[in-house]
Image 1 (cartoon, rainbow, N blue to C red):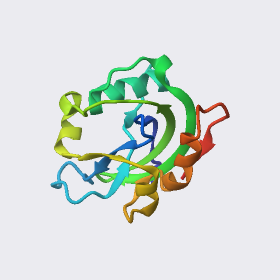
Image 2 (image 1 turned 135 degrees about the vertical axis):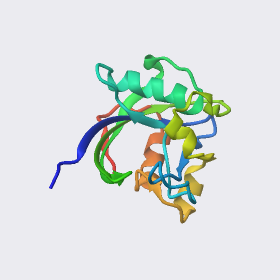
Image 3 (image 1 turned 90 degrees about the vertical axis):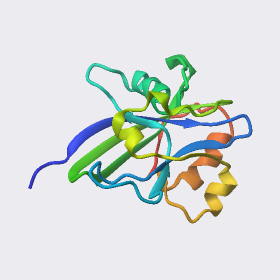
Image 4 (image 1 turned 90 degrees about the horizontal axis):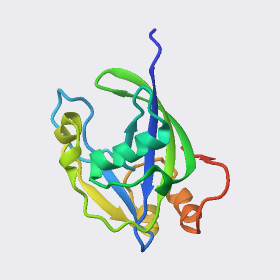
Length: 165
């Protein structure tokens, strides 16, 4: 049995002035299979490249995935840590996710910087209120997003990162 590919990952909880969170809808399970319905909603982010800090990766991913250019100092946290083991395109991936927060964002998503794989997924995006996340039957990553958002929305994060699922 082969070991999963360990993938350090940077993610950003992007919040608008009303406290809504920007989420992307994952639709792709394999680049060889056409995208289907949204499988789950997740925060922008992705893999950390060799020699790159997690914070720098988070900033790069925001620019690539949603066209939002910010500085590393604009990110708050890390606020959450998550480990997720799953399969993508037949490859076992052990994703070690570090989440940052970015507050008071007013932005129209621009997918122009997305990678070929990200464009292939034709992922939708949506701003969600904490109440909408809590009331939704949709799946989210992290899975306990509805429970974790209120604490994050209560004010600037000053503690150590929380473990999320």
